[in-house]
Image 1: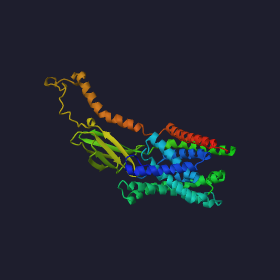
Image 2 (image 1 turned 120 degrees about the vertical axis):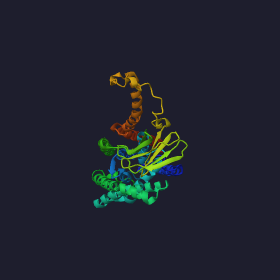
Image 3 (image 1 turned 45 degrees about the vertical axis):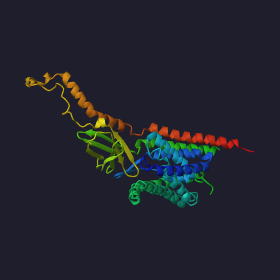
Length: 202
Length: 204
């Protein structure tokens, strides 16, 4: 899911840096001091999750957890994911420094979109809706990230359908796993700490 | 106030448990390519960190000026070899796998030098006719040693480098803990300054 250095052209990277910066800036604005520990914890979880390696046939994939981050953080998923990617790039040379913009965008934007689409259902009273929303957010965020990754690779000359096909097939198990993980987290939090799910009073 | 402290502490504890358990099966997710010369060919080996070979990935070889000399695909063991180019120069070997993964390796011209021992003048270990009937013990160890040393150095150098490369692939729990520490630190500093700013423009 992380794009390495040298794959995309400087123009594409420059645009993605600008867009990523806008996202991170807006996320920081929406993030209040009270929620910083939550952001830090989820950022750490994302950081570790990317190290969990799932070999699938010839390809490999890793957990992303951006669906869960979107549900719990909303727009603050942007700075959260950005900080984790930054440390990964600096400490593990995983991903890249020039690709911070595009990687942040590819993983944080789906998180925000899932938050906008499914967020209010997790705060809903009916458990079935909340669980379903959790599953869809988890799986959907990975799906959208895969689509955005394939779209980014189009700029290298790969055909979109070929890249998308490969990415999505490789991440199908991850989508299902993340759907369940997110669903269980939402279910657990609803029972134990429901106030964590009510992020922004929309 | 106390409620949110408990909540945050709980979160931190859960995350730490996850972080401590995960590294035992954690593998970083990067591709690498390694190359060395063997005989008259250059052998490349491509793999994901953790050791899994990168099969069917594209390999491109460039000269220092950036001109592409050749390209090919790795086989099922992640290997790809090609004959050493006629013009001696550094070679930049680029590995491009799917999903945006990329790795590089530079092979210097010195390492590329093909086995041309036959062309080089032999040291005086060539056994003269008179000694043909002599047993092994007759060959002077002083003459044998530098020969063996030279061959071993040449053969072992790529192995040493490969071991060094592989050694740094594993992600240790210490590094993971360090990474988490950095994340918490960065966000904590940000929160500190943010809260100072808002308290400064407090009431009035």
